[in-house]
Image 1 (cartoon, rainbow, N blue to C red):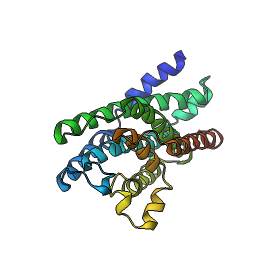
Image 2 (image 1 turned 120 degrees about the vertical axis):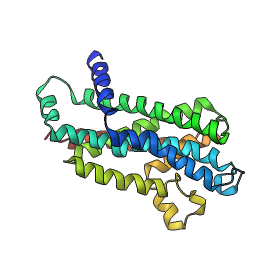
Image 3 (image 1 turned 180 degrees about the horizontal axis):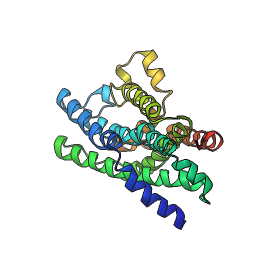
Image 4 (image 1 turned 90 degrees about the vertical axis):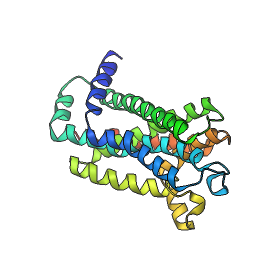
Length: 245
């Protein structure tokens, strides 16, 4: 446990020094939020699940904060470690692979919590976004969502050999999920093909899992179980496929 906490503290300091990660985690969701806040009239609409657009998008963009860590931050972080030989040194040390992965999950939870709180506070001040209907369930949805995307990020970091590859693929996945998973146009406004494609992406289920208790629709067990499955598959694949060099 002491090793895990020490590694988490070190990894946290290294994580916040990554400019790309900081932009995608803290700045970009806020920029999108203000752009959409200027586009839509903030009145309830069927397309936004009978909620005001900014009440709809605020929990969705909390999901976007989570996705940015898993799709951009973690893969780039691991790729840099691999290029600089850090992973090779870890392999020669007594540190277990689970400790390395665990530290990344804890860092993801800390960074996502800060980014999510910042986003919610700004939304409430700038757009009069309402407080969640079920705050405890929103928090309960937040944790498995972060863990699922941390597992995805670790898997991408385990497979992608270079920083350039991690950055390129991460950005593509981020943009596609942004547009099709409910953080861009609501699924109700998409074509059937686009809607079904969005439902194959983990961000769709993260957004629904956080959004449902926020808007008063209760707990989405289907989304929760799907994210648990994504976490287990990604974690097992990472352990089997992880490349130290």
